[in-house]
Structures are given as structure tokens and as C-alpha cells.
Amino acid sequence: MTEVDYVVVGLGALGSGAAWQLATRGYSVVGLEQFDLGHGRGASHDTSRILRHSYHTTTYVRLTEEAYDDWARLEAESGEGLVTVVGGLDLFPPDCAISPVDYVDSLRAVEITFEELDATEIRRRWPVFHPPPGTLGLYQERGAIVPAARGTAAMQRLATAAGATLLGSTPVTGVSDHGSHLVVEAGGTSYTCRGVVVAADAWTNQVLAGLGLEIPLTVTLEQPTYFAPPDPTPYRDIPLWIWMDEPSYYGFPCYGEPTVKAAQDCGGPTVDPDQRTSEPDAEMRDRLAAFMGSLLPGTGPVVRSLRCQYTLTPDRDFVMAPVPGHPSVVVGLGSAHGFKFAPTFGRILADLVTTGETTSDVSGFGFDRPGLTDPAYQANWMV
Ligand SMILES: Cc1cc2nc3c(=O)[nH]c(=O)nc-3n(C[C@H](O)[C@H](O)[C@H](O)COP(=O)(O)OP(=O)(O)OC[C@H]3O[C@@H](n4cnc5c(N)ncnc54)[C@H](O)[C@@H]3O)c2cc1C
Image: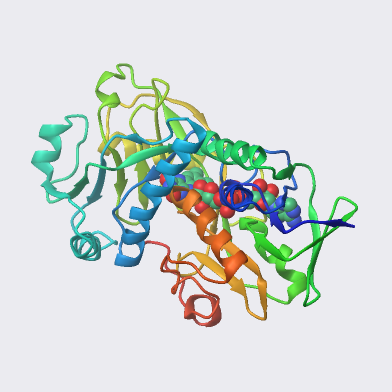
């Protein structure tokens, strides 16, 4: 039996953020990870993730303002440059599945500066893009890249430096609520604590099973792919981009290497995270390559692909809330767009587990919303 203030289950980006925040506030913290720290079987590995203001609701746009601040704080405390501003371009082709109206209205309401560009202007600024006539581009100059594995490792380092114990290869096999305290079972040790942060993403329901909660989650196996342009020069200065249609794609300028990374959003098969392959899929690669040939011809051959998990709620909204009936167990889940908010998740989850409150607006991220409670809810991931 080991006594600590708080246990964090799962040390991907979100759990590492929570461990950092809790330890920095002076609590004793144990973080438990089933695989090795920095592994590639979850969602927080590899090179780059998008950080952007553009979102479909004012709640998310406001939260992105906090995300930029929280990344700045992480940079200051770690002494590492983590945010690379490259500009962000949301591309809405004619009759697209994702309406630009919600994006434009939300950005305006929060007074975020952005530009509306037509296809000709997009080509004039960045000639490598070939958007079809009628495409609307929303350009946001603060669009940025944040490093996935490196950012996660930075939060782990800060957590450890502040006194947290982070253990890899230590799967949590039980979480039980005893009213006055909680017990977390892992690796032959029982951790007694006053609160638990569950940041287990694809494995969330397994961790919560002992508390009688199950939420509708879909895990898909996605595939980022790197292309090597024969001449990478023009790809160093393009913005990151998102193709706002069904299928949806996104990509990056060169980042740390003379390649460009791109992927389909929600393009992979549904999988069991314990049974899935790590091998690249040729059909997914070819579909992406065909799309790149139309939007960014010249990105060259594929040099590598890798797999990464999406864990999706039916409404694609986050979970940032205590488990109903167990106020000392707090869940964080990023619904496959959470990395940009990882330091923000860390701060909010630490607020919620220590005080039950936070100054951020998390009112839409509880367990009591239709997307998690209504069995007839129609999943919509294209937001
Ligand atoms: C290809 C891809 C591209 C993405 N692009 C973006 C982007 O551009 N911008 C953005 O904001 N987001 C993006 N995301 C989403 C973002 O990366 C994820 O939302 C985020 O990384 C999730 O972090 P996490 O810590 O919740 O999950 P994970 O990194 O999966 O961490 C959960 C951890 O919990 C551990 N765990 C589970 N069960 C147990 C247990 N019983 N005991 C101990 N440990 C356990 C797991 O092993 C795992 O390490 C992308 C995701 C993918 C896959």
C-alpha cells in the first residue's frame, strides 16, 4: 500500500499534462502508464500536431486562446521552443460537408483576426496549392505546429522535476472508490489517494469499468504519411492546412525535415486498441496520395507512414469532468483533436480533481450530454 495525493492513469499528452500541473502545485503524484513512456501505441507520438484558433463553436475558439497561453507557459517552464507559428489555412471547397459559417461566426464572435481568401488568392500566395475554383480559404496567421512526442516528453520531464513519480510498464488493473479515499491497483501495488485523473483515451472504458461507467467511444486506426517533394523549398513556407470536406484531409509544411506530412481525418478502420496492427495500410496511403496529387501536386513520393489511434466521442466533443457519483475521479479525453489543448487539459484536470472547479468553460464536456447518453445519437465527426 502506497499513499499519495493523486494518481494519474495514462501518460500520453493529457495525463502527462495533468501530472505536470498537479506536481507543480505541490501535491504528491504517481503517474502510471501501461506501456513504456513515449511509446507509439496510443495517440501522442510522432512529430507534429496542429494548434489553431479556428473552430466551429465559440467555446472551442475561446479554449484555443487558453491553449496558446498554456503552451507559452510550458515553453517558459521547460525552456524549450515548442510552438512553431506557420499560419493555418482551412479550405472549404464548393458544397463542402463542413460549413464555413460556423467557423467564420465563431472566430468573429471571439474577435480572432482571420482572412477570407478565394482560390486565386490562395494560389497567388502559395503557388503549390491547387484548390478548385470556388474554394474558400480561412487564413489565420497564428496557426501553429506543436511537437507531439517532444511536447509530451517536456511535460513528463517537468512533472518529474516537480517531484512526480512516473512509471512506465505499469498497467492499472483497478480503480475503486471508498468514499474517504480511492485505491488504484497497478503492478502489484495498491495506491491510496484522494483523487484520480483518468487520461487513458482508447482504454478509458476499461479503466472506468470498476466504477460502473461506460461511454460510447469509437477507436479508429489512422495513418499519417510523409511525402518527399523533389524540391522542398516552396513547402517550407506554406501554412498548415485542413480540407473541410468529407473525406477530410490535413497537412503541414516541412517541419524539421525536408518532407511534408499529411493524413485523412477519420479515414481509418475501427479497431480494438489491444488487437490492432502497427503496419501501414496501402489503400489508405494511395487514397491520400491521390488527394495530394490534386491539391498539392509536387509533394513527391511517399517516404513513410505510421499508425496512430483516434478515440472519438459521437459528438466529437471532449470529456473533462468527474465521473458521476465519483467526484474524485476526473476523466480527460480529447476526442482526436486534443493535443493542441494538452497543457490546457493538464491545468483543467488538475483544477477539477483538486477543487471540483475550474475557471475554464467545461460546461459542454460532461457525461450528461446527449452525445454520451442518448443511444439514438447519430455520430458526427465532421465538425
Ligand atoms: C494521427 C493523429 C493526428 C492528430 N492530429 C491532431 C492535431 O493536429 N491537433 C490536435 O489537437 N490533436 C490531434 N490529434 C489528437 C491528439 O493527438 C489526441 O487527442 C491526444 O494525443 C490524446 O492524448 P491522450 O493522452 O488522451 O491519449 P494517449 O496518447 O493514447 O495516452 C493515453 C495513455 O493511457 C495509457 N493507458 C491506457 N490504459 C491504461 C491503464 N490501464 N494503465 C496504465 N496506462 C493506461 C495508454 O497506454 C496511453 O499511453 C491527432 C491524433 C492522431 C492519432
